[in-house]
Image (cartoon, rainbow, N blue to C red; front, top):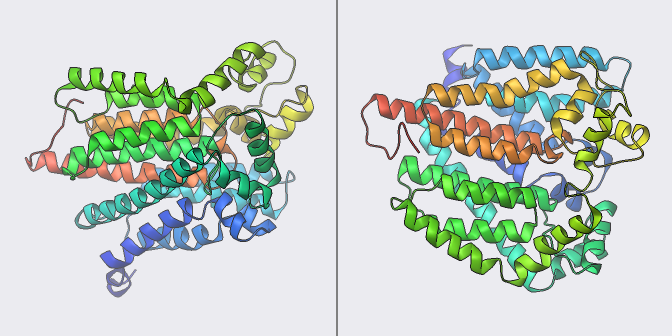
Length: 425
C-alpha cells in the first residue's frame, strides 16, 4: 500500500470506525434492530456491523495492524468450515458464518497503534458506560413499575413471539426477569458483568476517576433484575476477587453485608429465589441444559463427529429431533461440535480463549486475565455466542480491546511508569 493510503487513516478515522463498530454490535444488536425493522435480512445478519466492522478490518489491513497468527488461524478455520458446509446449506449459511464468526475472529487480531490506543479505549469506555447506564435505568424503572415496559413491548409485538411468550409466562407466575431492548435476561447479565470488568480495569490501569463502589452496587442490582443464577454466582466471586479496594478484608465484610441486606428484598425473592425453588420442585437445576449431556453419556444419541458437522443450527435440530425434543442445547462448545465437528470447535476455542489467555499471561496482566476468564466462563453457560448473531461479535470486540489493553500495560511497565498492578491482583 502506498504512503498516502496509510496516512488518510488517521486517529480520528480509526476512532470513528472502532466506536461505530461497537455501536452496531451493542446498540443495534438483533433484538433492537428487529424492533425497528423486522425482515429476514435484519434477522439473519447485522448489515451495519458488516459495513463498519468490514471497514475497520480493511483499515487495519492497510495499516498492517492485523496480527498474523490470529489471521492464519481464522483463515484456516473459515476454509475448513466453508468446505464442510458444501452440500449442507445454501449461500445464506456462508454469508452468516463469515459475518458472525470470521469477522469477529479476525477482529481479535487487531493491534491498535500505540499512540492511538488510550484515546480509542477511553472513547469505548465512555460509549459503553452511557449504554450500560441507560440500559440499567430502564431495567430499574421496569422492575419498579412491575414489568410495565416489557409487558408493553410484548403486547404490542415489538418482541418476537418467543420473547413475548416468555415475558407473559413469567409474569403470570409473578417472576421478574429483565427483558430489554437489547436482549434476553442472559444477554443483559453479560452487559452487566462487562460493565463491571471494563470499569474496574480502566480504574486500575488508567487511574480513571470512577466510583468503584457505585459500579459494584449498580452491577449487583443489574444482575439481580436480570435473574441469571450463573451470572450472579460468577459476579459475586468476581466482585470479591477483582476490585481496587486497598483494604480488601473491610471491602469483603462491607460487600457481604450489602448483599445480605439486598437478598432479603423482593428483588431477590421474587426472582432468583422463586426460580430456584421451582428448580428444586422440578428436580432440575439447569433447566434442561445438562439433560442432553447425560443422555449422550448414556448412549441415547450419537456423539458429534471429529471433522464435520451438520452446519449452522444443526445442533438445535439434533437436540429437538434426536433427543426427545429437548430444545435447551445450551452449551456453545457442544453446539459448535455438532454444527462443525470436534476438531474445528477446538480451533474456535484456541482463537477465542487460549490465544488471548496466553497473551495476558505473557504480559503478566493478571487482572485482565481474571476479568477475561470470568466473562468467558459466563458466556459459556448459555447459547448466546453459538446463535450466529451479534453475541460472538460483541465478545470478540471486547477480547480485542482487552488484548490491546494488555499490551499497553506491558509497555507502561517497560518504561517504568507507575501503575497500580503488574504482578499481582
